Image 1 (cartoon, rainbow, N blue to C red):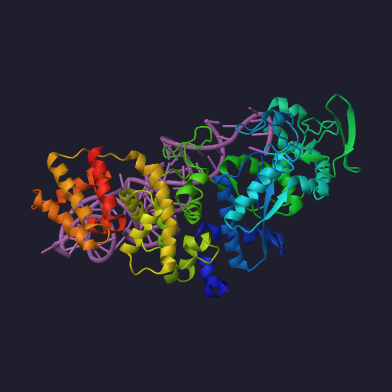
Image 2: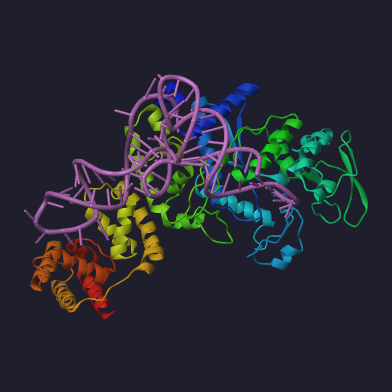
Amino acid sequence: MIAARFSRADIDVVKAWPFEEARRLEKRLARMKHDGVVLFETGYGPSGPPHIGTFGEVARTTMVRRAFELMTGRKTRLICFSDDMDGMRKVPPAMPNQELLARHLQMPLTRVPDPWGTHPSFAHHNNARLRAFLDRFGFEYEFMSATEQYQSGKFDATLIRVLERYDAVMEIMLPSLGDERRETYSPILPISPTTGRVLYVPLLERDAGTGEIVFEDEGGARVKMPVTGGRAKLQWKADWAGRWLALGVDYEMAGEDLTESVRLSQRIVRALGGEPPEGFNYQLFVDEEGKKISKTKGNGISIEEWLAYATPESLSLFMFQNPKAAKKLYFDVIPKTVDEYWGHVEKYPGQEGAKALDNPVWHIHGGQPPATTPPVSFAMILTLASAVGGDPEVLKGFIRKYRPGASSASLAEADRLAHYAARYYKDRIEPGKRFRPPTEQERAALLDLSSRLKALGDGADEDAYHTAAFDVGKAHGYEKNLRDWFAAIYEVVLGQSEGPRMGPFAKIYGARATAALIEDALDR
RNA sequence: GGGCCCGUAGCUCAGCGGUAGAGCAUCUGACUUUUAAUCAGAGGGUCGAUGGUUCGAUCCCAUCCGGGCUCACCA
């Protein structure tokens, strides 16, 4: 259906990065003579809630996936893999039941009780949050749990393979380790049969033939047991490599902070006889000053904040743009990104072939961008909000005044934006408002305007209010410079230097309400 | 210090071998009951710097400068 619009020639010249990625993936598959279902993966660590980086990774991976599907017509899957068998290294702060968590340190996250008591484990709780999070954006994916994979035996063959290629794996890993860890390192971590903790202990003996290892358990006993069936797991870089091999992952991207890990995991998977997936390192986000975003410092913005003030599509656009550059993630980019998104939506229907495929909205919507745009820009709604305050209903009224001919679908989009704008105004603009006191001349004129508005009442025509505003200005000495009069209204009453046309404003906001606004300002 | 990534107009980005582009922002003009609408127009970049390859480089190569990440442990 979608493909009918684009020829192979179009697709071959598209420059948009998801297509560049798809081309690299296509080459990999050709090299491997791989003609099955193509597997994309993203990883998630369930020791905390999903965050903006989680969104970015899934969104960007999905963009590559859709480009690849269009390019090749092949079947694909996206696995969101949760590392929920990892041991809990430390108690995550800001959570209930700290002492309960503390008692389960080093245990697999699926063995740690849920501090909120709503799920079978801490990991189950966070996994559920991940899924709810991804579902909220409509991502198409399959969730996969490390614990389930290990326990089901899906990774058994890979664990045995690690035993077989143990020396090669160690040779890759050891140079990357510090002296202390080098002494005790093992790519295979047994789960203690007595305490249930993930053990970071050396393997005293190993037998690839029987699949058994010998290690010193907590308490000092020498234990011999098989690595299979969830009794042991792989450690980090070997784990990643093992997963690629066991699942047959074809594409996975990672943050640039993981560049070195990716390199090592690639070498390991080769040592195990596999082929590393295609993928690239996207850059991390920075704050307005170009500094790394850290949760403890609280710089930059969180996904919750972005979605409080703007649409998910705008966030997707942000993720689409320039993934190889360290992008500045701060408040001022939000409104801009929202309007850029609509600009791209507007252009899309008029674009053909490669041009359309280069358009970010093709990628944001997996080839099916919406046809409707709001009748006013988000910037416009924000300025409106800054004049009339953060009441979405009032904003909606204004939008209909500004664009009487707008379709209902278009207005629905604007209404959605109005709610974001209202919130943005209340949190970000209103606190910074500065009202100046009126001069005596202005005070008299504003009082006059207030009483005339009250006299006209709420039912009058907007022209009547507008005329009143001009009459008052003329009557109070502004006949030659009415601009100053209006500026005075905005600065004294609205706390800003510019504002809306007074007639429509009074009509929609209400004549009495406007009068009250003026009187409040004079009482300030 | 080593490795990887990035550096195009005020901002966000596109262009990736053939006389510098878009959106937003800014400024000007029009609409004469406004100053956020709308329309028309303008200014603004030695494409981080320097060398090299080429008839020709923002685009290729080298070096340098600036920024980010990474080089105990954990993931």
